[in-house]
Length: 254
Image (cartoon, rainbow, N blue to C red; front, top):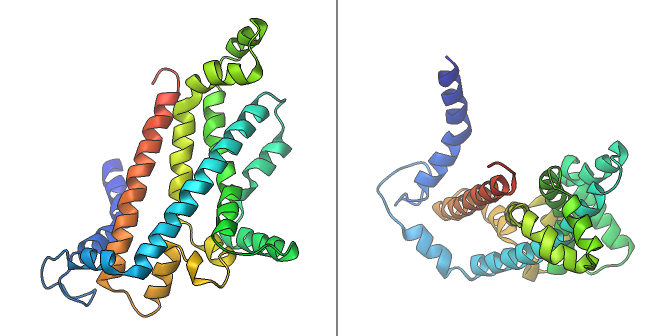
């Protein structure tokens, strides 16, 4: 009974995704009528300047925000774990993960407008850093829960600086968690739409891939959109899978 229930849940969750992926290979231009197998729509994606530009923008935003958020989030996790536990501090750290994206998007847009900050790819990057820091901090802190702090204390007692201790003691022990956090942040940034939509500004040069999909889908679902969504889904699945493997590798006894 339990296996049947689990199978039913998986069918409910993934049937729409499977249908989307299958229709991305549909030879017909209509998304509901199957007429044969074809990879034509994937080829058309490579021929579209708008899609290529949007994909390039998404990669720029994802790479930049991931690097910044990973550095800040890792240092934040190290600092928080050395302090006395505080439920209030934890609530503040995890707030960007909990509040709805639309609320965070409006807050960021209001802040950028208040300080007269020009919108564009750079504002999207900063916005993605804001919510990615919380995810990076959470993943790295999970590893630090079982971290032996006596190793760093021994390193400092032997005369090593704080930077040297981090480079030669701390980071080698937590790097799988840092990589897992970075992969998770990259995935979230690639897939994120609402915050990017609000903080991109009016210029066409700051359109990301999810924003381009939204612009295209207003005229109806086409096999090209299915193909693009399939690529994003597969890439996200691979990155999440890698993140889980690195995260397990960072845990003692796994």
